[in-house]
Amino acid sequence: MKDIKSQAKEKMKGYCRVCPICDGRACAGEVPGMGGINTGSSFKNNIKALENVHINMRLVHEVRNPSTQINFLGLKLSMPIVAAPIGGISFNMGGALEEQAYVNAILQGCQQEGTIGCTGDGVPPIIHESGFTGIKNLKGHGIPFLKPWEGAELRDKIAQAAATGCSIMGMDIDAAGLITLRKMGRPVTPFSQHELEEVIKHTHKLHMRFILKGIMTPMDALRAHEAGADAIVVSNHGGRVLDHCPGTAQVLPSIASAVKGRLPIMVDGGIRDGVDVLKMLALGADIVGIGRPCSIAAMGGEAEGVAKLLSNMRSQLEQAMILTGCETIAQISQEVIFKQ
Ligand SMILES: Cc1cc2nc3c(=O)[nH]c(=O)nc-3n(C[C@H](O)[C@H](O)[C@H](O)COP(=O)(O)O)c2cc1C
Image 1 (cartoon, protein in one colour):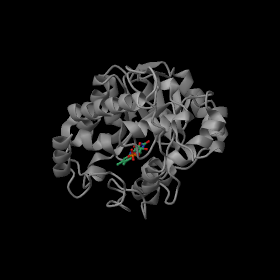
Image 2 (cartoon, rainbow, N blue to C red; image 1 turned 90 degrees about the vertical axis):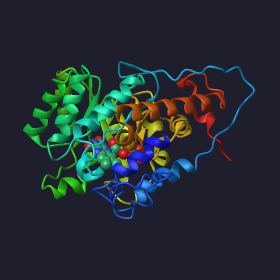
Image 3 (cartoon, rainbow, N blue to C red; image 1 turned 30 degrees about the vertical axis):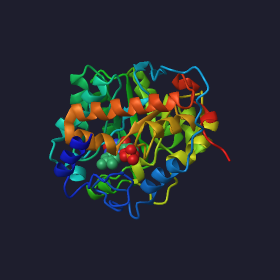
Image 4 (cartoon, protein in one colour; image 1 turned 135 degrees about the horizontal axis):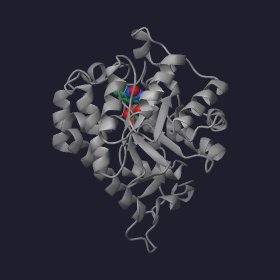
């Protein structure tokens, strides 16, 4: 990873410093760019929230070869880890890789390691077009995320998503806070529960499952479930849409209390290694998304870089499972969390 990171540093000059710990301090306010909005506190809170979670180490047990495999919405994955959707390579990362090459690196690196990559959306259209092309080339092995566009535009993009052959699509409803869309004159708004229900019904008619991303409260999680969402992503968009949000690890337990078992819960934000993955699963998630570390790996080492990052994270997760006595992902529970 050292070489991959140093190459990424070169390629992302002026956009990302590739800090030893990617924690949102150096890049506060850099949106567009790789930072968090304004003071960067929502990005930094993601990191802090995970730092504040401690683990019960347990060694008197029989666990030797834990399994990291999971089923997620009909997909068999080698690990409970996916690449989060990230778009806008030219204005966020400097464009040393073309949008399509970046998307291919993410999708192929994930597939190589037995998991799946998500793709982003935005303005210009090359963002979602690259995602769709990349997923189509892998015979539907990818999860496209769309913005909550109005009316015909959304329906048209959902049809294009279905044409990639994917079985799951998502929508980042929190994009209503994106400066980058506002700057391009294409702001989007929140959806009512009824509007959401209509979109989800339409997606189901096209034989795709629907994930709603940008959930930060139990109320929104319940509304997503009632509207028919098949999964949610607990996310503050990597701290890029609203300043002073809590970290996702802080809100995850209450959201899990509200909807756990009714629909799968994905979480992202500040997850940097396999121990962070274990923490999120113990706090109530079923699967996690990795944002910026995947971007850095893709920029520095393309598909091989992404595969290397994921394989490292999986090994770290396995090691953490052994040291906490968890044989399977389902066995990772609140018991893993140290409580005073
Ligand atoms: C440069 C950049 C672009 C992003 N683009 C999208 C996008 O197009 N769609 C989306 O749903 N989320 C997008 N996100 C948010 C990520 O999917 C994810 O929620 C966030 O990066 C997770 O936090 P982490 O980077 O700390 O892991 C973007 C994030 C970054 C940093």
